[in-house]
Each structure stands twice: as structure tokens, then as C-alpha cells.
Image 1 (cartoon, rainbow, N blue to C red):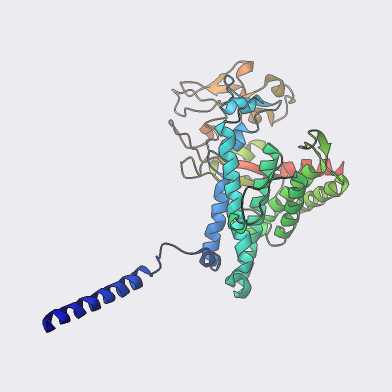
Image 2: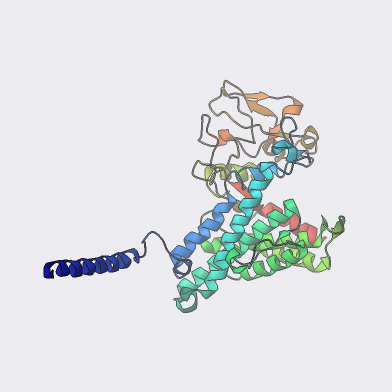
Length: 414
């Protein structure tokens, strides 16, 4: 009996020891997972979170294809090639897309993903320990990251409003809302928040000449240029929701003045950005991963990685047409209207960069095309080092140029 009792006691003891050991073991934090608080208490982790916001600019559903090459195809200069279908890119180009069109839904979702990621950083940085008690250098970095997140969120909302009109406005992470089924917000209210955000961002983000950062990082010139662009949108006409009519923004002179002041400030800082006398160089540079000779390109979306999430199909989907039997193979998905070609003076160097009057044939030679087969010319696979059937060419998309700044200044001044 004593032996049996001893065995029972030993068994219970071992069971308790095993249970305690398992609990203690399972309570260990995984080194591959960190909490939201930990992310924003570390400068390097916060920078990684910031890159995650930038990441939503690129790819097939961002400025790598749909927003850049499809959403804008409905004007008097270019159109999507091919026959009409309401469920693909041609439906958008011809003002007859179906509600089920995936070309609309996917970019819409990606823009809001970018907004959610920006909201996380904007919400957490002011509450982080490193921001409150860190070194001056760390605090300056966190200030800049905060300003970049504000700017990227503004760009995402501007793109949403430009394409969809009034949309739900969310300026905090989804976890901070009781529910996320938010109603549409009047665009003027959204613009007011964005203009205020960009004014803050401009105080903590340096000019390009002061930053020494890569070509696709936000600098003060873009912050001010985007603020001017949004101010002009706030001042000008747009199709309103209720009532459905074209209507100008209220107090328009105030917003034209904002646009004028911001663009004038950029013009005064030509050490950071200036007009490039070589028009072709502005666009070739985007194919070659460098800045153009005068840094006319103020902000561009970086494309890399050879995949649908982070790269672009610029130059393959659109741009110069290369015969499938040529060594390049691709392009030609966007057609230039013949009337647009004749709007250029024959001595205007921009014409033959903007519009292709030729294509690359099966022998890799240029061949003049008919007037109804012109294509857009700023994106060309043969300007890259990529050959063969590859669709991802690493060509960046331009968001803002110094030329845009000059035009906005002229509009606001007038």
C-alpha cells in the first residue's frame, strides 16, 4: 500500500511539474512577432512600417497599372485600345463600366489599405516612448516619418476622391472605431483635413537638396506641391453628390492663394527642382532608376521586384508597341487620338516623346504606323534593359513634376 501511495504522490507531483513547465514554456514570446506598441517604440521598426505605407502605391492595383494606365483613359488625348466590355479596362475608358468591374474594386481596396497603414503610424508615433523620451535625432526621424505618413494618406485620399467622388473618411486605425461602416464624407471636409495635415508635414520634411534620399522618397517639394493640388481641387468645380451638379468650392480665393503660395515656394527653391530643357530625359530617367538631369521629377512611385505587387507594367501594357517577334515584345495597350498629335506644333520637342508615330517590327526596326495606330510614347520597353516576354519592367510612375508646379502657379495666379 505504501508503495502504491508513493507512486500516486510521485505521479501527481510530476503532473503538476509538467503542467507548470508547459505553461511557463508556452508563455514565451516568439522572436518573430512583435506587438503594435513595440513597433512604434523603435525607430527602425517604425521606418519599416512607413515603407509598408509606400508599398501600397505600387503594383498592378496601384500606380503600376490600373490607377496610372487605366483610370485616366477617358479624355481627349489617349484611350484604351480594343473593343468595349463593361467588365474590363475598356469599360472604364468608355464611361460604361459595370459595378462588378474588378478594375475598379481592387484599386479602391488598395488605396484604403494604404490609408489604414498610414493611420496606424499617425496614431501610434505621438504615443510612443521613443517619441516622448528618445534622443533629439530619434525624435527628428520620427517627426519625419509622421510627416511622410500624413502626406501619403493625403495622396491616397486625393486619388480616391478624384476617381470616386465623396468617400468614407477614416483618420484613425479601424480598431479605434466602434464599427467601420462609415457614411460618405463631403469631399470639402476631407480636403480641409488634408490641407491641415500637409501644412504640418511640410515643417518636418526636408527639401530634396537637404535630404540625400533615393528618388522615390517624399520631400518638401512634393508635400507643398500636393497641398497646392488639393487646394486647387477644393477651389474648383466638381460633380457634387447632393444635389448632383457641377459646383465650385466655397471661399475659392482662399484656396487659390494657398496653391499660389505653395507653388511659389517650390519655384524659389530651384536648387531642389527645376525645369529640364531635355524633355526626353525626364522620362528616360524613370526607366533607368535615376533622377533626371535637373530633378524636374519631384515625386515618382518606385517600381521593383518583378512581381504584380511591387513592380509596374508600364511600358509593357502601354507605351511603344513592340512586335511579339521582336526582342522586346510588348506595349501598345493605349492609343493616342490623331487629333491630339496635331495639337502640337511640329517644332515642339514634346510631341515625339509624348506620341509614337512608329512601332518596333519583328526585325527590331522602327516602322511608321497609320494615323489611327499611334501610341503613348513616354513609356518604352526598349528604353529598358529588359527583353523577352517579361511584363514587369521596373519603370516608375510620375506623380508630380516641376512642370506641374509651374502650371498650378499660373492657374492660381490668374
